[in-house]
Image (cartoon, rainbow over all chains, first blue to last red; front, side):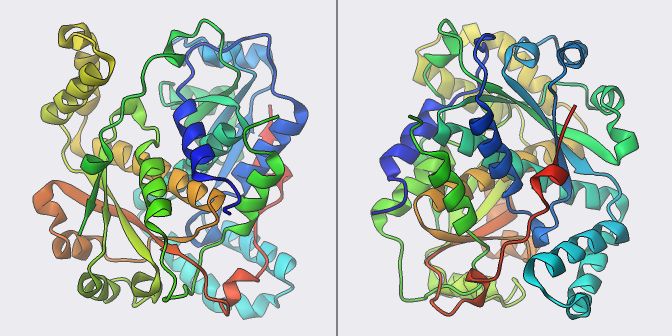
Length: 214
Length: 214
């Protein structure tokens, strides 16, 4: 028997949807939120670099000011939680060394034994700036996929959102000064009982059109 | 009770790892593979556009030729399945209309009722070419995250891989002619009993360093 049956996995992926209207009175429990934080932390990334940081916006006043630069979408203030998925800006030697220090710490590996890997990682960083950002930003979207999947398995509603002014987020949240930049956001919580989007049939192309065997 | 307990979700996300050595004798069952195909088809995307296609490479000879342009990594031929996650090239009016036709079909909505949405989607497509590809390619990585999460829940091993020559993949698989381009790949199957990577401790930064509350 698999750890989770395919019926449950697919059932939850069907159950999830981009929640348009959250119940503002329902909060995700501390235990569940903690699980979601752990889940997104476990997301894989290229070389394991984790070129990201996830900001959880608890302050209602900050949420309100973010809503104004998010096409006024209600989820920004009504959802239990708001996560801003950010990419590391201009990752370089310090980021590689921080990662290698962590590998050394977790695996008890001598730092010198990682010199070859270090050289490879620095080579990957040494591309034109735009390319590195493209590459690292894509990793952030893996984390989003893992977050949304984990939320679905836990029965927590979520809404991934790209409809926001990234530069304004970077300013309002002081992300630029911290070395990060917002790429995508997700709101999470529980759907309102009258969210019409919850009962609107999910639209996907048929499997046979999306997947081709060669 | 949640559909899946946080212990199981986190347990499986801990259990998964980038499989370096697959057992070449173990194949994913047709039922399990079917579930994974359905799972990735259910992945969310911006506006629900699904600007992607996923190619599953069954032909051993093709797998062999892909291995040669994938740094000779053994997973390409040893894994039970290989999926090439592709982005739609130069998405435009035809893609938008195909999507709107599908919405109309699934929801029984008159096609005219989607005219406003159509205008918005076409506006999003009408950015400089590079920006559209950046945007759509990121969506492909959401699908990767959903695929990897679903595999983990089902107890199926996988390895996401960026170490391949994308242009060669596009040529060998005839993707360019089909209007797609490879962005990332994943191998899936079952770990070899002697894959050392399976027992090497997972390296992640602590939750407190990856997540910041504001």
